[in-house]
Image (tube, rainbow, N blue to C red; front, side, top):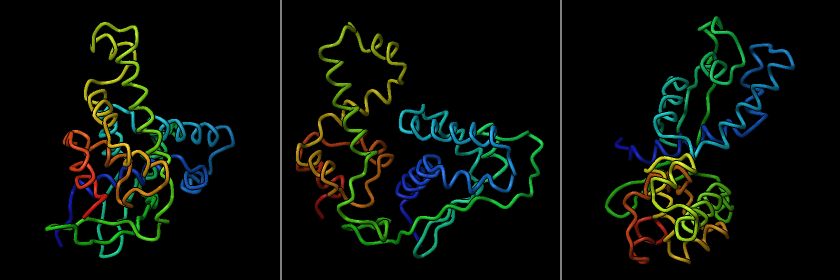
Length: 227
C-alpha cells in the first residue's frame, strides 16, 4: 500500500502535539514511573510548554525531539499508530533519571485514518471527526501569520534580518507565515467556522505553505477545499 509520506508526517506531528497538550494523556503515560507529585507537575508543565511551542519550534529542534522519542510509526488500513519510548519521553520532560529502565512498555498513540482517492492520487483522511469542528491550531497559525505581516509592514524593523533577530524566529518560518497571510479570505473564513478539510492540520498547512499558489482559486484546490 503506497501512502503519502507528507500526510503521515503531518498527522503524526499533530498527534504528538495533541498528546503533549493533554494533561490526562501525559499523566497516564507517566503513571508507570510512579513519580512524586513535584516531578509529575513539572513534567506536565514541560509537556504543555512543548505543545505551546510546537508550531514555532525550529525544525532542527523539532526533528531532534521526534527522532528521540518516536520508536516506530505503523500504518494500517484504518489507522496510524505511533509508538513512543516512555523512558525517552520522561527524559524529554525531565521527569526521571537517565537510568530509567529501557524495557518499559511504549506509549502508543493512534489516529483513525484511511486512504481515500484525491484526484489522481490518494490521501490519508482522518475518521470520526466532526466536519464542522474548529481547529484552534489552524486559527492560531493564521492569526499569527496576519499579525506578523502587520508587524513587517508597519513595525519598527528596517530589514527582514532585524525582524528575525527581534522575534527570535527562523527565516524559513517567517517566510511560511508571510505566505499564509495571503490566504484567500474564504479559506480563512472556513478555518474560523471549522469547514476545513479534515486532513488539513496546522503542521500540514505549515508544510504546504512553501508551495502555496498565489491565485486564490488554485489555493482552494491545492489545500483540498475543492476536488
